[in-house]
Length: 67
Image 1 (cartoon, one colour):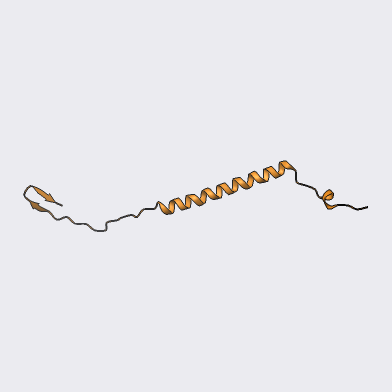
Image 2 (tube, one colour; image 1 turned 60 degrees about the horizontal axis):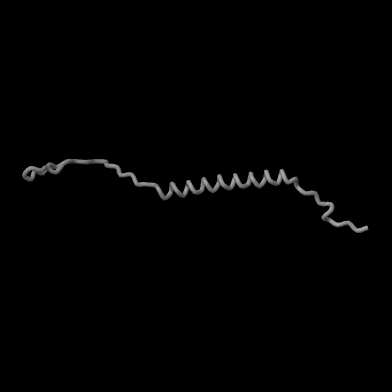
């Protein structure tokens, strides 16, 4: 009597397989969202200009003053 391996292999329930596929899809979408937010913050950074010292010079030219 000859037995085939296909008859002895047990399959995962379709419900469990669907749950696993949905979970993997959710995890991957969250990972891609975090990756895209990281790229967005890298490209949208701006430089901060800070004055450590300042002075004013008044130059009177007729009616205008430059400070």
